[in-house]
Length: 208
Image (cartoon, rainbow, N blue to C red):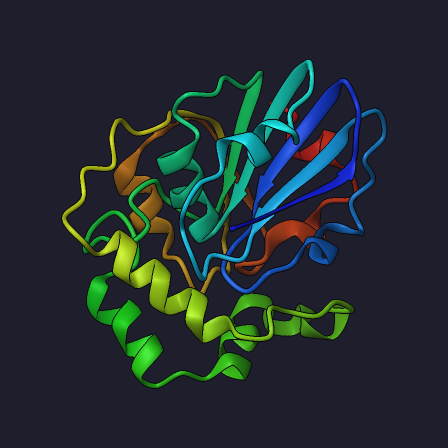
């Protein structure tokens, strides 16, 4: 995993991105009084507590997107957050009922087509994309599959303060997130899997 400090502030947002996404994918969101630390690039999944701790502030807010929801759930159990918001993902990540099925996930590796993935992620909003992606996304996909389809005990599941679900998500089925039911509040938005273009500020995302 990689850890990147974008801006330091007493109030820090810690964002776990989806597979293949880089910090620039968040650049359109106004930070205001918040700082931002980003965790991404899952081609290896060893957690560095020291590096992660350097992203933290006096008050911390957790955001996770897509498979980043499962990664954050797995590695943030020892940390407390003032608010925790997830978007289009589940704590399980890979699961027949409460995530992307192992069969479907494996098929996306065997028949790897990153351009097709981007089309599904953004649908008609693909033209808005002005940022690059990880140069080797397949390696991330393989690692996520290996880790989250195994029989490892992943510990207790985080109860998210808010789950954001995109009505037009073609990557992570709404029913899988709803089946897991690990959230206090649900916000449904008219957007594709990458729902962040729906928002202009981080304040809007953490509004409950």
